[in-house]
Structure formats: structure tokens, C-alpha cells
Length: 169
Image 1 (tube, rainbow, N blue to C red):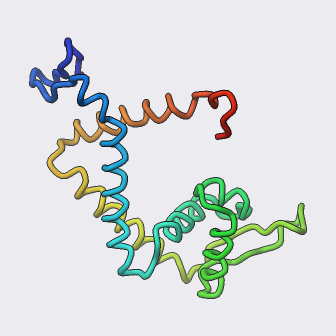
Image 2: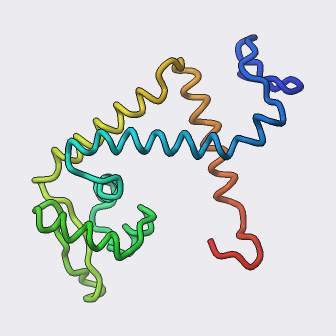
């Protein structure tokens, strides 16, 4: 288990990184840059399927949430509802998604993947795995687990924060 000693992280008795104030001050920039580079790399791969990142997000979330409403899918994917409608229109025209009227609310549609798109979704998962493998190259299994665990804790911290007064989430 890693332990923090002074301004250094000691992991398996090896000094991994000097956690000086300068490194901590740039943590947000580093996280943003890692996210941007990871996203760009994935998008390069997704071009082989002629898909965009928002389209891939919609497919992946829909796979785990079939029957969900368009409104809920927009929330899950963090996509603008109008953007999602255009994505779903294209997917429906391609025979990948079915919109069904929600029996409890005739104004709402529930969304379902068709059998035709299942191989595409599996290919998207393969692209995710390839991109993740590249990103984590050189890290041991233990380091990968530690990285994800720490990021999950940071995510939980940020998710649990109340909005600042006067700001909308």
C-alpha cells in the first residue's frame, strides 16, 4: 500500500514522484490534458467505424440501459438533448436504434438497440480496450488498480460537492 511521506509518494519502497507544490498546482491541467489525449486517440480509432465520440457514448450507454427515455439517455451521456436527437435520428435511419412509444407517457420514447448494431457496439468496446491499453502501457496491474481507485475517490469527492452559491451545476 502506498504511503505519503513528506512531499514524496513511496510505493513499494520506491520514490515515485516529488509531489511539490508546482506538481499539485498543475494537477487540473494534467488531468485535462490526459483526458483530451485519450479522447483524441479514441476518436482516431472510431473513424474506422465512421462514428463520433458522442455516437459511441450513446451506443455504450444504451447497451446498458435499453428501454431508457431519450431524456434520460441525454443525462447519462451528458449530451445536449438536441444533439442526441440528431444522433438517434441517424441511428434509427441506419436501423441501429428503435424508438418505441412509452406506454406510461405517450409523449416519451423508449430506446432499444437492434440486433443489427450489436457487432458495432462490440467493435466500439474493442476500440475502448485498445485505447485504454495504450494509455496504461508500462503500468503494472497493481499500479493500474491504484490509479483507478484513486481517480474513483477523486471523482466521488467532486461529485459529492454542493454547487457554489449562485452557480448552477
